[in-house]
Image (cartoon, rainbow, N blue to C red; front, side):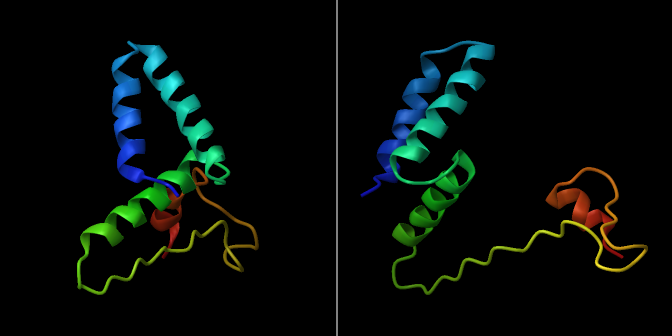
Length: 98
């Protein structure tokens, strides 16, 4: 079972061992390695799962619902099917919506 507190400690401890550009590069490698150990395909879904576990551990008796918004990839009809303004990411998608 994933111990998210131990994973967070590992990340902080590992970060302190590197300087400059090496920090970002090594942290990316560590994230991918740890994600795959636990069966997630990348760091994004791994850290998302850890965040959800953290919320669950802190909520006590308070009911919690985690809502994951869908991502708009492109226009369905207007101005034409497949149209996408700007970069392909959630923020630009939100800005492109009328």
